[in-house]
Each structure stands twice: as structure tokens, then as C-alpha cells.
Image (cartoon, rainbow, N blue to C red; front, top):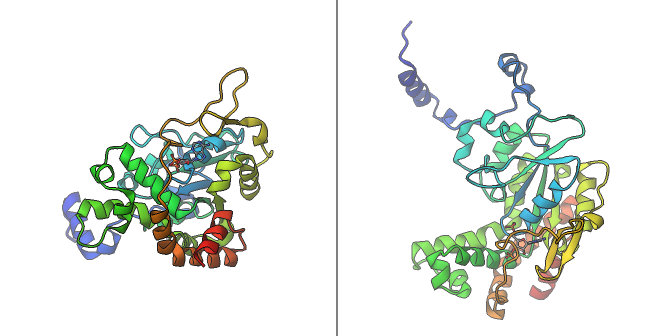
Length: 325
Ligand code: A3P
């Protein structure tokens, strides 16, 4: 019998089993063999019961802050690098392993009533995220927030302008969305980040490949913006969280912000920061028409998908399909 020093042995092993090079973390408590070698100090309960998966720019930060007001719901601890998002299933953090992930969650005080969650808005359209999430959190519930994908694309463009992305600063939105294959690479990257997450049905199908339809809830992001109390009630019913928290009392509309904010007794409402709910000019009718056309088939797919799932159609989807028919 021959052996090698650990690193060489590992190299050899992955040469023979290259498909095992990328880890796929599973819940150690779901397999007796894993549980038996899992340290006594550790618990499998420091994992979220639900995920807010995005996509970006649909109101996910507002949803995160509203959920955090609920006495029975607890969000993950903030990350020093990515703030309220952990971004575990979507990128290199995944290689840090599940102990790293679990450290973002408190030890639950009462396992059956505590609803821990995390929100990472780039999970939605990341290819590997559903597979990874389902391997570790097979029983989790999934919340996705959808707004008109044209508005999402425009909000992302404005976000990049605010962050001084030279492509967004030096090109109009129309130039970005209509850029052709001969355009500079950076412009095409921006275009892709504006447009790709908005192919909602394609991304949702990937999640539905790994999760049962009754584990997935579509949040109408436009309604979340205009009537958050109603939306929060629907979310609570979907999650099965009790008691139902009354958001009509917890939230107040702030005229100067132009959005719903947290009501604070005897003080000004607590709103999200300047980067959420930015002021910018309306999208031009030209870009609107281009994107209506661009997303027509994707939106039709979404309509079919929501009908199949028996989930209500967001008002923006009905309007968009009417205007494009
Ligand atoms: P804009 O800044 O383009 O208006 P996310 O948190 O997913 O990045 O989404 C940001 C968007 O959330 C904002 O985009 C804004 O329109 C929307 N939003 C919805 N409800 C909000 C609220 N109560 N406060 C601030 N922004 C809200």
C-alpha cells in the first residue's frame, strides 16, 4: 500500500475524480454518517428557513428591512464586505464552507418559532445558486421579488451611474440596451447586467428544478412599493409565521422620501438610505418600447409559469402584456 503527502494525495484524488473538485455542501444532520462525525458543539439549526433571492433592484432591501421588524423573524448578521447580504451560494464565499455560513446566524432561541432568513439578491440569476441552496436547505422557502423587468434594467443602469461606472456615465440607457456585438466589451457587460436578470421565467425555472412549487413565493415588487402592508401579510401567510404582524402600524409613508418607511414613535420615520429610491428622470418612451419588445416573450413565459403554479399575476405583468399585444 502506497500513500502520498496530503497535498499530493489531494491532487491525485481530484485528477481521478475531477467532478468532485467543486464541493456541494449538504446539511450534516440529514445523513446519519455525517451527523455522527459532526462535532457535539455544533448544531444544524443555525441555518435559514427562508431565502430572499432577488433579483437586484426590485425592492429586496426594503423587503429585508420590513421582514426584520417582525418579532419572530431574524435576519442573518451583516457581512463586513457585502453588508446585509452573505452571497454564499452565488460565488467564491461558497468555498468557505458551511461553518462560515452558519456563523452569520444566531443560535436560535426557540427552534420552532424562530424564522431565520438571509437575502442575497444575486442568487436569483446565478446559475449554480439553486442547486447549492437546495443541497443545504432543501426545506427552505424561497421568496423572489419581481417588478417590470424594463424598470429593473433602468434601475440597475442608474445604480451603475451612481457608482461611476464609466460605461453607464458615458452612454445613454438607450445606447446600453441596444448595443450590438461589435460594441466594447465593458458596454456589453453592463448591457448583460441590465437585461439578463429580467428573463424571469428562465431563472425561476432553474429554482423550480430544485424546489417544489409550494416552496416558492413570487412577491409583486410594485405592490411591495405601493402597499407593503398587504404584501407583508401575504408573505407571512406563505411562511406560516405567527403571530401575523400588523405592518399597517409598523410602517408609514414618508412624503419627502416618496416611499414607505419604518414608523418610529415620537421621531421621524426611518427610511432606507439614499441609494435606495434614487431620484432620476423617467425612462424615455423609446427605451420603454424597445424593452417591451425585448421582454415580450420572457413575460409570456412568466405568465405561463405563474398560471401553472397557480400564483396571482402581478399588475405590471398584465399591463405589460396588454401594451405589447
Ligand atoms: P430605485 O433606487 O431605482 O428607485 P434593491 O433593494 O433590490 O436594490 O431595490 C432597490 C429599489 O427598491 C429602489 O430602486 C426602489 O424603487 C425600491 N423600493 C421599494 N420599496 C422601497 C422603499 N420602501 N424604500 C426605498 N426603496 C424602495
